[in-house]
Length: 234
Image 1: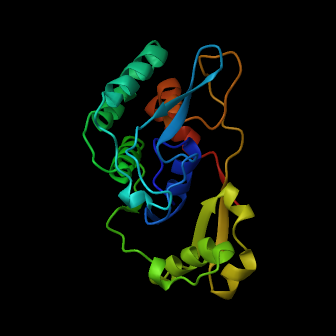
Image 2 (image 1 turned 60 degrees about the vertical axis):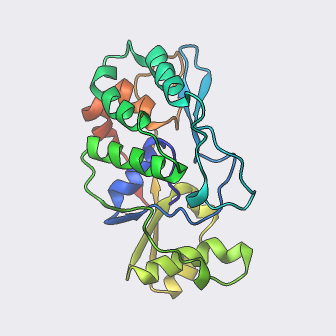
């Protein structure tokens, strides 16, 4: 999976569901994805993006080469946003120091920040999965040049490298990956399906798939750990 910025709880359910999780940053950065931004919620239910500012780059730059624009005080801005919207939540003081410790570090590359955030949240939630990060060698030179199959071939190539017999992806991967293609390579393909993971938010109507930060500040460490088990492998 790509290294996302404080991703939603389903990302951590996926990590929890596997033996080995690879943060693969050798793929192209997608501007409107979840690599440099994520969502929290305001008291009226409207969404607010927390963002990492980036330096200018070419459109085909891989995630591993994306640099953070540290010329401003963006880290303090995000910390102030989290304090402003969540400090009155009962679990804020329990979880915020872990988040702040990540945000107050200076990283040159976005992938390093995201890897640190994922590892910090996994440690907070006692997720023991082996996580392989930025040092994982690229597989790109082994892929064929068929764009519509490149993503699937990349995953299969990594599975072969890892001697894996099962590959688990998020539920959105059902639109991307073919079970028959994986079966022909001796790989069982599964998807993490997250049922309705509702919890008490501070807004009138529940807003799903927010950053894990919203879950932590609303539910705390133990409450979030209980939600982590609320998934199915299909």
